[in-house]
Image (spheres, rainbow, N blue to C red):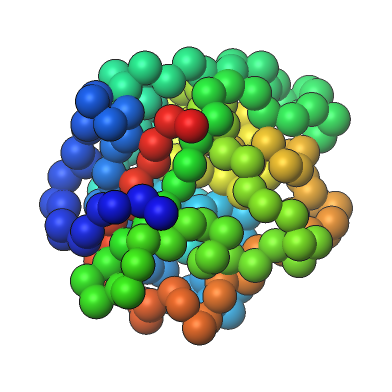
Length: 188
């Protein structure tokens, strides 16, 4: 179990010694009624309403922080083959904590994979495509050619294009809309 307490970070925190970053965010209550393919999206992006967590951190800042802790990007995803390939890159753990939470929760505690699989997050890279598309995505729940981090478990399109899987929020655990959270991304 990760030993991190909620700090209420206002800015992204990079911890090179622990090989982790902490991204400040807020719960997006729209996700409760309309689960999407995104876990974390920047407020500046055009996908900001389609995510479980919103943040002020940009994809470029996030990407650079991952490099700073020593993560290696996979950079293997391209649009033309995205539906047939799985994202590669540094494996990452993602946990979330908030004021009053009784523990640090893994993403697998907070979202429910309709197929019962676990997430397998990877540092995809994709920074140039991310800048070009302007989605604001930091973490996607399938293998993505845009987001800096995505889930190796499913290929691109598994959620929205092919309806193979969905990721509803675990309403028994995830706090209410607007709750500030610390999102901890660490190297495995």
